[in-house]
Image (cartoon, rainbow, N blue to C red; front, side):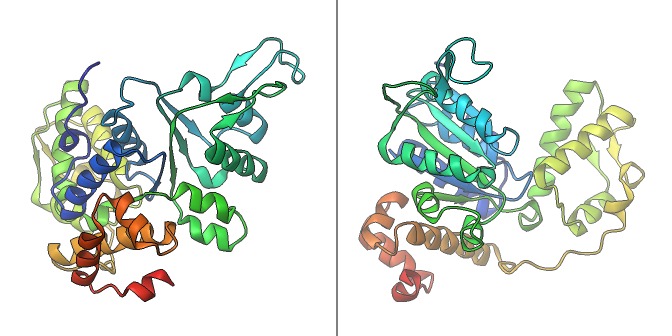
Length: 325
């Protein structure tokens, strides 16, 4: 088995929130957590984090399988996951082995999990609880040992309150929650990432961009990056394909970036210490919610002792009673 690349090479950045994220991913990857829920806006790297959770786990030599729940209709998704027997439905001319069998021992990544249809939500809840399933049209049950990694770009609790997502499945998925910060809240990481992307696309497209003009840096700071890291990557690849020179200049930027006003400061804006505290507070609050306020279980899933969790909550000014509520 090829050793996994160091996390600093896959989850790139120097911002404290990213440093904390790498530490959390490594803790969760090495744990025995069977379900993980990743939150993040479009383009923040949810798939990359899911892959890192697999590659740095004891399951790394087993398959990693990804399913986009928004791209596959419910009836086809059931067949993809569970498989089917010959003759189970029209068009089932042969037995199909589902991903739960082929990925046994590994990880299954359910991207855009909030898009699951109600019937599939119920089936996956049963699967998570029992680790047993049947191929469509089969009589006998099978067992599976996979880590389920789910991702969404919306806070699922809001979907639960809106009646669009089962509350029992929400609590079952959110044993451990990982929140990915948007690029606009990562400070100078935009330049760390830009350098990495330029080096990659220079090699790929035989371009020679080495520098970023000061005016471009100022525009990058102002821009809100709604497409996050993916948008930055696509922008720099386009420049490396279509433009010439060794410096990325304002003439290479689209109007939406040049004309963008400074984004409103996020709620967690401030010093690195303040942003790190806000990230840690959110991580603890998410774990507390998933464990219904049980401090012992929350400490366990976060990889802390109960005493260390209490100390950290006190340090962050978190009230136990309020968090439980």
